[in-house]
Length: 428
Image 1 (tube, rainbow, N blue to C red):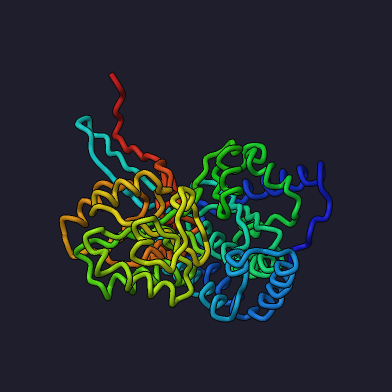
Image 2 (cartoon, rainbow, N blue to C red):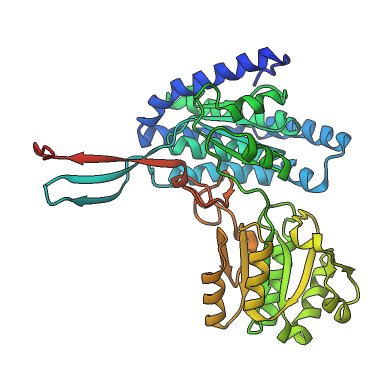
């Protein structure tokens, strides 16, 4: 089990510098590790998580108790709490990562030049990755496994509220590395709750850190994006929209709306705004909102919706830019797909948007004109997840436009290099 580092100040600076150096030392042996060795480590990690399930649950019970005492919100508690099903899903996610194609060494493009040079673009590990996250102990397993598969050492800095759970999971990951003969420093968990540790990671740990991935609330992600001196893969908010077109089948629209909002309200792919085509307000609006209310959702409606559905609170301008992460949804009527596109492009965080429609032209316009990382047709926004995309798992959803966008899985954790093969050519 991880030994907690109690000191702060200069001791934390020294601690983090040492963690960075050890991660950098693990980078080369990990980058050249065979697929078989990485997969063996991953499968051993999954087995250890299953075998130590009770240890993980016991550690999580401490975190959950502390979270209740400190007044963590319902959405944070939902993310924090583990149960046997979630632990088994964690192990299965690691096994799915092991089954994925190893991206390292893949030739993604190749071509020949007129002078006879043969050029290849080849996937390589990114380097040392830092992951900073809150409340989600499962990120410890997901991030550790994904980074390992892509040949990257990773430094994990979980929130203080999940440190016991993360430490129990991390012990399983280290066991897997040890059994496969890979460097144990390839996956390190920061053993301190001192906030200065985050600051040191944002500075880049003396040049040993190559990329930072934050996964947490708006304040954490905002701080990372503002202060980081190394590249960042992140999304600030998940203000996700669901649009019900005039061509939507009512039963489908009801089912998708309830699932998109209420399946798990605390995930970043939960729908926060519901847009309904004004043309079907008389047929679709009330059944959809009745179903949401029956599921326990609070409705914040614009003035036009309130005239039809009075069992709601008046929406304010703030509602259109709020990530509730709770059983609350903002509802508005719009003029067809054009009105939906205009609203989404004005207020979206460019995370995930969905359209329910049978009209192919409406769907194509929605897909073509909206610039968000994930777009769905006739499916819940809750599918915005690397596991659901067949990636085994994800570290997070990236909404930027450089390098990674959407679920950050194994392939997104690689860079590339060029291999140029000649036969004695010199440049004139």
